[in-house]
Length: 384
Image (cartoon, rainbow, N blue to C red; front, side, top):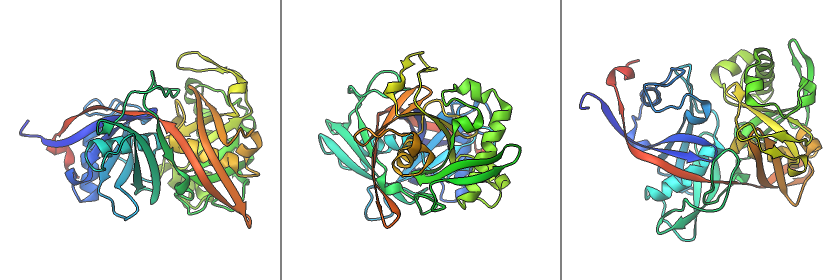
């Protein structure tokens, strides 16, 4: 093992994702060298990620770099990286809400934040977006609590509920909750025609489209969408055009090549019965306010991203958006039907002088440490 580079790391599940957590001070300062180290840790690029810790799936090829705070209103800095499986690329253009759920517990357990029972409030500075996320983490015996009775669809069993408030992340990528200033825009999609979309930026930017406008129901399974190359191509065209309309890319080609993860795209539809693809549980129409399917890294998300939940909840609260038209508000709680079940978000927004302000966007998650120790990297893989 002396021939290899040894780096301290931990693997944590956050929500319905799993990520590798690294200390900023344990990584090279040079960004290019740091990325080569991270790619080697994950075993990328390789569709199996067989020579690293990656799980050969976008939901398990995620990284969090944790360091001391670089601003006075934060307790820790957190940099998210979506590690590509097929390309030597790490996308830092946005955040992951599910991985964010594990940042507070990691910071507490690593001694970066003082533990206070019964709940420790952790102010997380997400460096990708420059925004603050507030995590309310239950604590027991000086450590982040793991056991509890809170259940989230897409994760077996129950755990301790962590509340994440993303209200401070409005305009995370573009500086505005509505990047174009309009609740609905029209894109001219090659091979499809004119298409109405809503472009919203909260936690991460998203493109929303009606499922019916694409000939879809909104209850499709990941296998149905991912196995349809023509549909995947159309969805990527829409996403890339949305990125250009938001000012995130100059051309659709640049959006697909340089920022494959963000904006995300969701197609939404009115409530209807469907079965969870993970356990075949029947989700009744009355359990949700609307159904939505989320595209992430050009495949369908198997559940629903935490940041996607935030942005979808914000869109539901903004008058005139495509999502708002489907949303039946229930005491400030939005219930989104996704492929594996239902996710809820507490959302509140206000409008003044035509400007919409996101006042609360809180999502409940669970998280836990799976392992920690050292990962070993072959030095030859770090060559440019």
